[in-house]
Image (cartoon, rainbow, N blue to C red):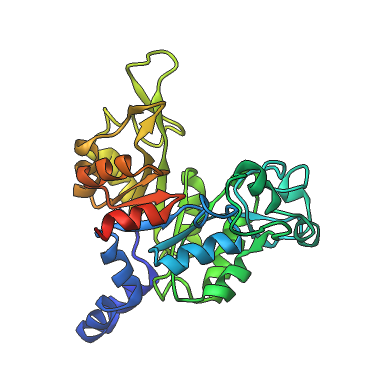
Length: 309
């Protein structure tokens, strides 16, 4: 059985008046809204500007997305930085592992010019020289005007990440104000976050693909659950003991790996379903028709266009 959070315990002890107040808290409102549809800007509006940079997040925020999605890692000197890959080469002019560099060294890198090489047709802005962001900088810039969907990225490469992340969330009062979700493929990482602050809402990420031994059988990357076509209520219930939702892929190499039954089963066990990363409108429409609770996308403008039709 999941243990009570501190807020829940204090509320129960304080009586009905406190319970009513807690039911109207920003955190409770956030959890209630997870049952509605969420637009999640994957690394910001990363189809339009360099991923995980301030321009990408500013654009997504300007469009009014529900969540800014980001990957948290640690610099060599313990600063929480926003970067997806474990190594620097793909989206910067640096080399090597991100956790082997100090923040000063990371700040000296150009994390924008690569975008022009990858998208030569995008000439509306010059992103060369764009710096890597720290979590503090993102919070300082947007504050409580948006919500943040934060992945503990590669916890094995970033020892101490959970402690550093929770410290920053508490310092900026992001949890009580209903401003953050923490996601990970690594169940152990999520449980570390929960032990540090049981009020932080957690999302268990899943990745389904065909088994190497039998292509007709699906498996989950970390064996967090059985394959999506063999998952049971008990499997969802185990996740619901510590998480408030799941994030999953819907397609593997062009073939569906989840269906409406999976989505409904997850929801009936208290776990809204968010699907990553969906960039084409026809696929967005298909998944919305299946009943998903949200989509990660590099092109939040495309998703918002469908929602606002």
